Image (cartoon, rainbow, N blue to C red; front, side, top):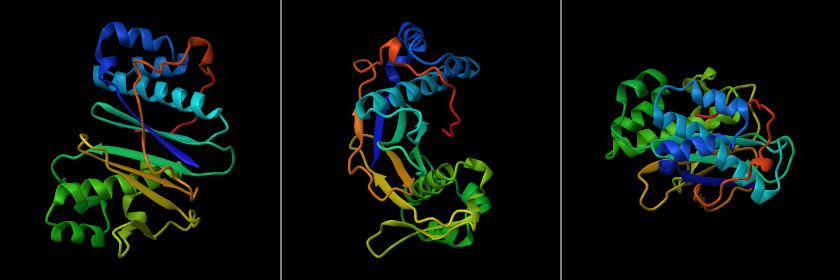
Length: 226
C-alpha cells in the first residue's frame, strides 16, 4: 500500500525549533537546507524529511521502500510504500491561487488547455491538472526533465483522474489518488504503479512526533521532491 502523510511546518519557522530539528536530520539533508535562501523553504526541506522519518517509524520502512516528497506554502507531503519492491510513486501538493493560463498554454497539451478555457473555476482545474501531471512526472523519477506535454491527463465519467496517454518508456499501469483536506485550500495528488493507495491522509504534528536522533538514517538518498 502507498500511505500518504501531511504536516504543517509553521513551528519550524521559529529559529529555536528549526535549529533543534536540523539536528534530527541527516547531515546531507541539513547541508541541502542550509544552501536554501528563504526561511520558509529551509523549513520545508527539514520538515519534509522529518515527515518521512515519522512515516518510516510508523510503517517499519527503510531506504528500500519507495517514497516521494512535496511541499507548498506551510505544508509538506510524503508518500511511502509500506512494502519494498519495484514500485513507482510520486506526489504533489499545490496551494490554490490564480490560474496560470500562460503556463498552461505553453506547457500543457492543447486538449488540457482547452478544458481550462471552458472551466467555470479555472484556478481549481489548473492546480488539479498541475498536481496530477507533476505527480506522474515525479513517479517516473524524471521530474521536470519529462515535459508536461509528453503525456495527457483526463477524467473518466465519474470525474476520476486517468492517464489518457503515456510516454513510450513508461507504459506501466498507473493509478491516481486525489485528496481534499478540510481547511486547507490545496490540491493534492498521488500517482503510483501500486493499485492500493490509502483512502485518507495521515496528519502529522511535527512538534509531537519528532524522531529521536538515533533513529535518523544518515545515508544520502536519490530523491525527487518539490
